[in-house]
Length: 195
Image (cartoon, rainbow, N blue to C red):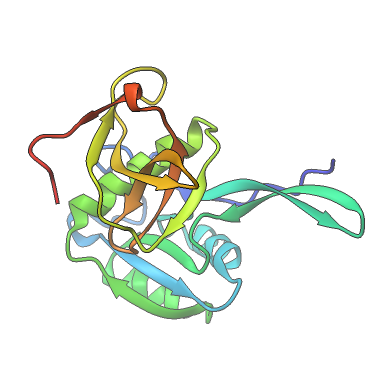
């Protein structure tokens, strides 16, 4: 099965590490904030390439997906949240990103720390190679933390899909997330519940 060339998903590589570093171009961390970019249709990867060329920090979470094209199987990386990319930039870099003509809207992020925490958790889960299911429009449920194993420490909301318990790891700003199958012995409730 041919594997299509991997697209950039994060720049710089340590963008989601804490504390966030000061990057090139002499721009201080204090000037940079997270923005959620809503792209024009199917422009996420092209925008990521443009931002990389301009050395503007971004994160485009992607997962592997198998495609069948003309009876041939291909494995590719697709965006976890179609149409969305996360930019960590100064106001000038935000304007530079608009010049790519690939952006439909830019959404400001009120709670910067919450978005960063959500993106770090999502990135770590993708890095583990766990089989993920993209979830949209989060529903209310019990907050829980995985106690044991390679996923220990991940926090999310317990949901049920087709009679199977799953832990929903959410990006609250988008009201979307990914879920992974769990058993009840793997998790413990989070007290008090964080909103």
